[in-house]
Length: 399
Figure 1 (cartoon, one colour):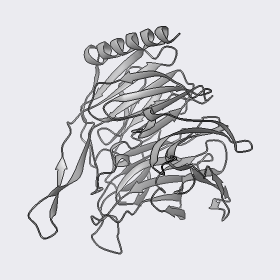
Figure 2 (cartoon, rainbow, N blue to C red):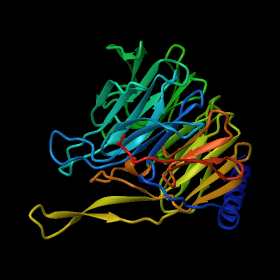
Figure 3 (cartoon, one colour):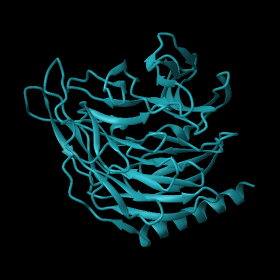
Figure 4 (spheres, rainbow, N blue to C red):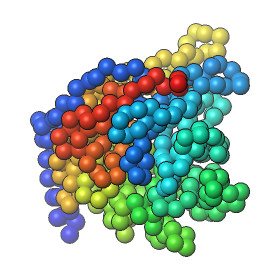
């Protein structure tokens, strides 16, 4: 059995390399006003799209946005409906199940290693800040697609669950994990909302903390369905799961995607996109496709220098294009390969955390026929042909 699995894996990797190298559909660059989006989202009914744009703060406290933020458009007409200022890197963006609010997550430090990480729940239309979670892990979040429920990572637990009523967050919460399992690195719901999946830290017998835990919870009674530890999760920066929970995909550095059986939690395949960047996986709503986006970030890095502080902040440049590869989920062979000429994105977090390099930069439409991508600002492409169907454009953070 092991020999067969390895042979299938090897063939899959060879085929992936051939298609990635030779069969590329180029999505041409288009002029746009704001930077490329760091995070994007479709509403559950498909009528709205939203995008988060990173941006600097105004300087010292009290910190205020300096050009970044979240913008909401009408999906059909491209009309801008709403804008909310924000600073830092917006690594996650999701609508609630009823489309009454969105949740965006950001990471930021003003440069002195004091992290300012939050997830903010904002009402659609009114723009009212309904709730804000802050803390070291608060930027790791998931929104249930079927219930008024939000999961937020917690230092001592895997995550905490908060319920919504009348658009507000209840004061009570429920903790998941604890003990040796703690601090989610990635969170994702199945599309039917019946399971919550977490990649999280584990406290070893030697009291070392390693991010090698993979746990699935049943949401009906919040019972533990399955838990494993695996060293292959150590560098995981992104997580996706099919609607029925059959497959789990984890995104890693150097172009690696690992596929896990959603029932046994065994690693069954490994895909290699042959890139130096992190990669972001997402499954189509019907589970028939896995899409993987390369993440070329132009990010700030600390460098030692002969200055009063002892360091200076430089910027590492990583190309200008990004690749989106679609695989089937029967044998995980590649179907389409799109290359966005204008696909890089900028980050603003001075300490260069891993979350800033793998934000949620693309999303399938609810029917799976279109893909929203943070390239050329923000564009919607046909999921089969790669043609640009619409571009969403407006200066971020401005009315």
